[in-house]
Image (tube, rainbow, N blue to C red; front, side, top):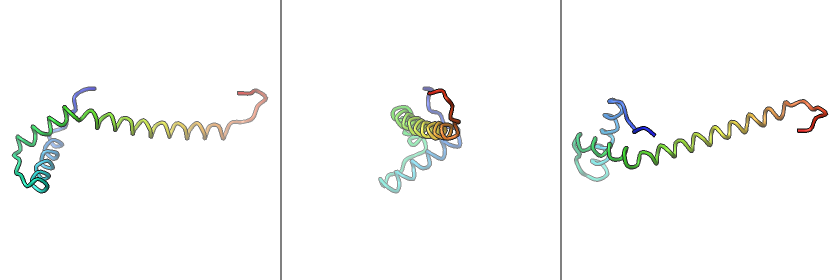
Length: 84
């Protein structure tokens, strides 16, 4: 897995959300540098957990869709004298 990287706009938005969270929930002011540092820490140390969860969720959706397709193909299969 490559490093989790965000565009400048994404990083600014996420950093601002971190600052707002600290202000509202923890009653602490957090500067932009500290918020970016915290974002980088979480991306490096826990980002892979969220990334992997997203992959597993996507895989579950794909597996369900493939099963639906297999069922649909079975339903339109024509009977023959050959057994499967």
